[in-house]
Amino acid sequence: MLFLSGQLPIDPSTGKLIATDIRSATRCTLDNLEAILQEAGCTWEQVVRVEIFLKDLNEFPEMNEEYRLRFRSSCLPARQTIQVAKLPLDAPLEISCIAILPEVQKFPLKGGQLLKNG
Image 1: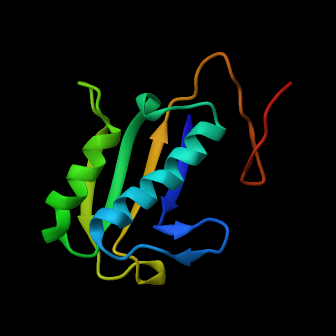
Image 2: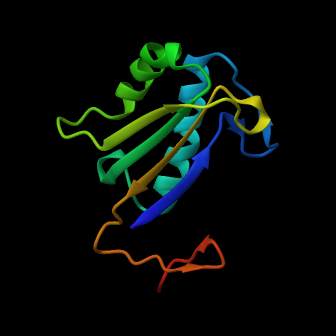
């Protein structure tokens, strides 16, 4: 299994928040998660659980429209969405997920980093 820590709408090269409106923030955050999934040899199809933390639950419909563009399967991952008072960098949302690694690949964790075997 692959456990992805919460990601924010930040530029990975600078660590700076790059999106504050909920639609672009959702896209950026999902882009960051997708990059990690791809590095591990996964796609959105292997994601089995998603946790979304929103500063404003009233923005759920707009966030959900962007979310559904990534998860197109008829069998969607389990998801919970929680409103929170504050997030790092005052971001409008944070998303984490759990994926099942493809059986043909093994990625042991060491010191919080993904190491590819062989």
